[in-house]
Length: 376
Image 1: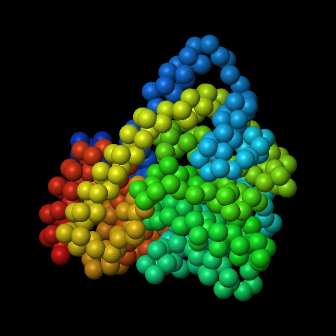
Image 2: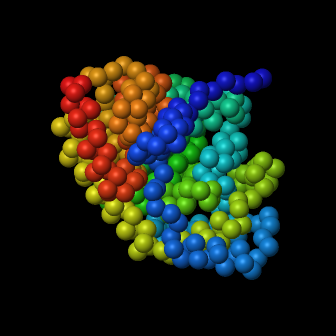
């Protein structure tokens, strides 16, 4: 039976942005959560060396798995056997592996609304039923233990994201512990998307693994490690689901690129350079939070982490997709429509990525200010 899913509208926005750029327009890309910086210099140097000396092939790096195991011990205080890491071609295949390994067709899986567009569509593609829970300002746009406790019957699983996309909100440690307790009591399997870990402006991010050892953890080198195009991520699977995850990865995806694995291993020790990127995002966030209320964008989700501003434009439109296209054509600033993240309320929201240079944020604000002032 075929499944119909919604498109990722931000891709259409980006396509329009590139068309305008080809016409000679100056475009500022704030539609994707894509760091404007490249991979760390040492990682690129390692890649050059490997290209010159190694023919490469299908391979999963034992050294990278061991380094990830050490990372979890150092960052979260959790001991994880390196065999539990399945290296993937980014977080998207890791999410597919997690869902295939943990659930059966027809199972119900809860998730926050707003939330990352691919959660809903990947669930549908795998013949799983998304149970979207409306999360607004009162919940800081995040799932809570109370939400999960109220579901009757309980779902088979839940997808947690902290920091979240599109809002950047972070779930505090005490609430993560309460969520884990409710899920244990009700037999709900947790899939935790932690790809934005390392990008926090309110203190360290906590892993769900600290509170629930049986959780499946999805993560990536794309965000904090600034390696989007290298397509490298991982699934951390519990022992009972590891054989299924390895069977699926071998048949569906084979292995992550060997070159990326070599570079990713080196990138994990480039902390000074990577923390420099976080400081750029911190400045960009401050600039936007200071300026946007003056443009009439006063209802903003708390951007605790990641690199997004999720803002209401309800006073200006109830068609945020058309709004974003008009904004792009008029100013050259590309943003994302909230309909990707929330099919119900998203038509009144936009998402602005500040994963660009500070100079680009400043120029974007120069362009946006008269445009919004003219409409308010």
